[in-house]
Image: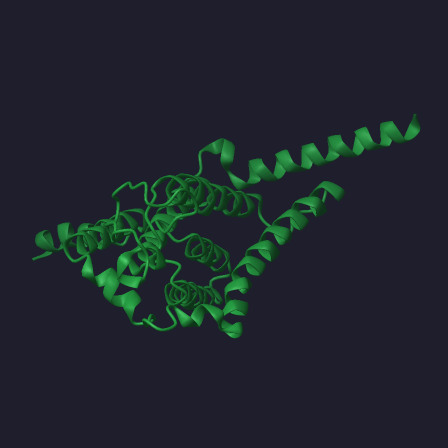
Length: 262
C-alpha cells in the first residue's frame, strides 16, 4: 500500500503546483468552450434583451465598481513605488516592501495584464465583443476561443483585461503574513470574480474571456513567483536585491550631494 501511495502523493503534489494547475485550468477551459461554444452565448444572454441590449452597462453603481479596479491597481503600484522611493531616500534602512516582493509584483503586472493580455491577445486576436455578434444585434459571427479573427481591430474581447488586473491584485494577498493570507486571498478571489461578472454583464466579454484571462494571469504570476520569490537564482535572492538597492541609493545620494556642492 505504501508503495502505491507514494506515486499518488507525488501526482497530487504536482497537480497542486500553481504552474501545473494554471496550465490544466487553461487547457480544461479551452476544451470545454471549444466543444460547447453555446455556453459563451448562453451565459451572456442572461444579461441581454432585445429592447435595451446589455442594460446593466449604464448602472452607476456597477460603473463605479468597475472603476474601483483601476483605482486599486494604481494604489498598489503607487505603494510599490513609494517603498522604492523610501529606500532610495534612506539607503541604510530596510526596504518597506521586500525587494523580491516588489520585483514579483512589478514583473508579473508588466508581463501578465500588460504584455500578454492587453498588448498581445486583446490587440491582435481580433475576437469580437458580445454586442458585435449577430446574436446580440451586431453584424459579426461568434468567434471561438483561440481562433484569430479580423472582426475586431484592437482592444477586443479575447481575453479580459480588467479580469487580469483584478487577478493580479491577488498577488498582494499572497505576500501577506501567513495569518492574514487566507482571508486576503479569499477576498481577492471574490473581488476578481465580481469584476469578471461585471464585465460579462456589461457585454464587454464572454465567459470564456474572463476564465482564460484568470488562467493566463495566474500562470504568469506563478512562474514569476517561482523565479523571483520561491526559488530565485542567487543573483535574484532577496538579500542580494536589498544590498543592490542600498548601494544604488547610496550612490544616488552621493551624486546629489556632489551636485549640491557645485
